[in-house]
Image (cartoon, rainbow, N blue to C red):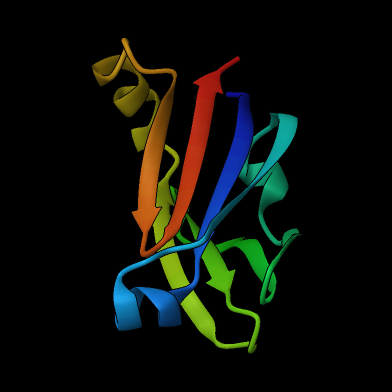
Length: 116
């Protein structure tokens, strides 16, 4: 099953949020047309933001699950999200009024775009 995968990265200045609750936001959007989680698995997507680069990588999981690893600019694992491939079509049907499924990861938003 093919999907257009869209990653929307919303980065906030964490120090500013902790100190005075004011946040400077930047947004970057990257789209991969005609892609599947299977095709993207093992490939790395690099997004440049104010403080450096966040790296996104689909890694091998079980036969039904892919993982999206998010690596922070300092090289540490920022987050690891499981994306169940068999669950995506079901989520799409359940949210038929919405064009995407959204995964929230701290201040990063990852969106699976609508099925092609």
